[in-house]
Length: 346
Image 1 (tube, rainbow, N blue to C red):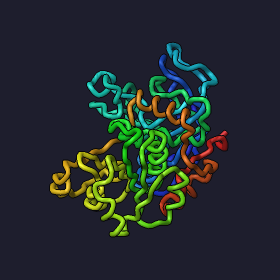
Image 2: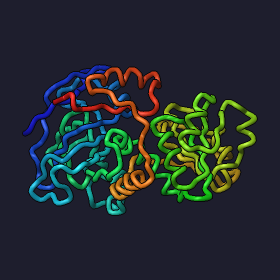
Image 3: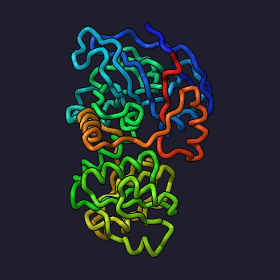
Image 4: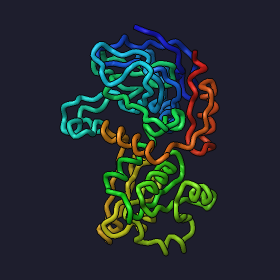
């Protein structure tokens, strides 16, 4: 086994710097020096729910960029020194219908997650990217295209591909009318991508506090969901609505904004929700969801972002300030993604 340094949970709301073990490289592995790792709400939820268990250690982090430092004997896709990115999936069965369709995120045997997953060969618990090194199958690493800043690109591997999937699945392009509900880590990237795809893009938020941010990101319009007049005037307006609200909420007001044969795609809150069938019936409206992305989609998303100058709006902190990042994330005090600089782990 090889060792590296990282941040491991010691209980709810607590992490400590420790020495971690990484596996020796298998033939199709690469070793990555982790330079930047995004802080996702999933990390916060995992930390809050964590109870110390020697058989289930928790090292968060599933959206990171870095540099290849070593390649396995049969690895051919990368060379030492290549800039790479890794997302929240590091393996899958490779043989089910979903994997064969390039949707490893929907693997019927369940994909191996970057942290908190079970390694398919040795059964160990995967430890995430809050560390200076990660060992991964080369098939689940992505070349970081030239022009993408590695810190700003890290959140693309989770938040970015999560919003990219429904935008592409629903054929968004010139002439499309897209609304993004919630302007946070997911929402701000959805706006940038929808605009770059040529869609007329609107941001829907509770108040007008983020109106100027929405304009800066490229949105042509802004709706305050608490303004009943605005919401009524926008009824049946959007071909696709990307709902990034992370808390339970009433879908009815947003379904009313969906155009005939349009879709409301839920990306934020994935728990139980109540939907009135009539809200779908009137206008033949559809309700969908998405999560992460497969290998072809992730690679295409990264290239699209490089070609169109899209990156996350980030605040970079030394990894030693990970506790500060979590505290502020709980207060929604970030616009729009924290990224940890892992170089202080050397």
